[in-house]
Length: 460
Image 1 (cartoon, rainbow, N blue to C red):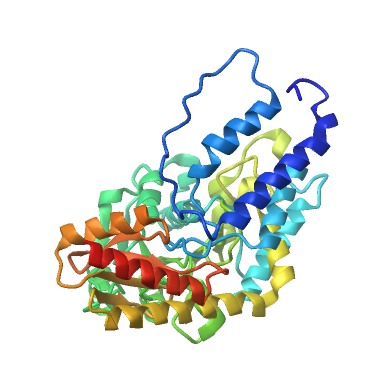
Image 2: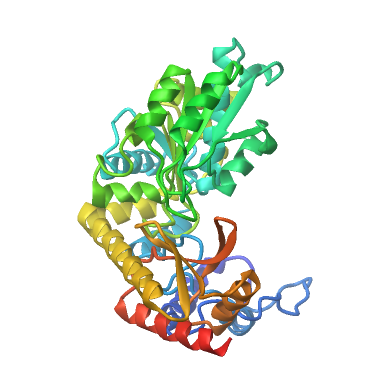
C-alpha cells in the first residue's frame, strides 16, 4: 500500500495489521520483559517520498515494539501506573477513530458525554454535586489548573484580576508539607514560584502535614493571599493529610485549599467518605488521575472545583468565533487547551461497563496484594520493609545494606525484566518503591515477583 491519496480504501488492511500488532502485544505482556532494554531510536533516516506501508509495519514491529515497556501488564509496579482495561482500550481506539474536538458543545455529543463522565466521577467518589470540572492531560495539568485558580482567588482577595491584569503586586504564600513534584512544577508554571513554598513540618514518621505546624505558619503569615496544598496519599508513603482540620484552618485564615488526590481518592471506594479522605468534599479544588487506578489509557487526568467561575475567569478565550456561554461554559474556557481530544470516552465507557463495584473490586484487590508483599518483605531475610502506608505502595531495601546497594538492586530488578519498580527516598535513605495499581495483577504475579526478588538479592 502506497501512502498517498484515497488511503482509506486500504482500511481493511490497516485494521488487519492493527489487530495483529495489538493482539500480539497484549498476549505477550505477561511473558516479555516488563521494561524495554534497547531504547535508542532505530537507525533510520527521513526520506523524501516515504516508504511502503508494509515496510513501515516491518520496521515498527522489529525495531520498536520489542523495546516498549509492558506498562499495561500486571507486574509494572513503578510510579503509580494502571493498565488499560479491555473496555478502556476499546474506547481509546474509538477516540482516535472518531477524532472529536471536545472544545465546544456545537455539533457533537462528545462534549456532553464529558460532562456526564465528570458527574459520574463525583458520584463514584461521593463528592457533592457542587463540584464541576474537566478532563486534562494528567495530574500535572490538573495541578496547574489548581495553582491558576488559587492564584485568581488570591487576586480577588486583593482587588486584582490576575487573568486580566497580571500578577503585579500580588501577594501569595503557598503552604505545603509533601507536595508531589508535579505540584511544584505547576506552581512554577503559574508564576507562584517553585522556591517560594513555605514548607510545613510533617508528622513524626510519615509524610502527612503536622497540623500544629500549619496552624502556626498560617497565623504568623503576613501574606494577603494564602494557598494550602494538601495530599490525599503522598506519592512515596501514601500518607493522608487531615483534611477536616486543614479545612478548618483554611476557613480561619481565608486560604484556598487544593488537594492532590491523584490516586488516594480511590480510598473512598473502600473506606468511604468518612475514611482517610474525610474532608475532601470541602476542598476548593481537587486533582485526580484516571490513568492511575481507574486503569484507562494515558493521558487522562481530572480537575474538579467548587468555584468554577474562578476557573473560567482564568481560562476564558476572548475570541469572537469562540464565544462561550457564561451559564454553561465550554471546555476551552475551563482548561489549558483550546483543542481537546475525546479523552473522556474511556472513562465514560469504563464507568458504565464496570460500575462502582467493579472498580472497587480491583482497588481492594491491589491493596490486599500490597499488604501481602509488605508482609513478605517484613519476614524476608534478604529485605527490609522500610514502610507500608496501608494502601498500594510499599517501600523496601536490601537488608542491612547502604544506599549504593539499594540503587544497584533497583537496577538489577528492572534489568531482570520480571517486574518493574521505581526509586524513592524515605527518612533520608534511598528505598525501592513498588506501587500496585493494575487491575490484572494476580497471585501468580506476586509469586513471580517474590522469586525474582529472592534470586536477585542473593546474586548481589
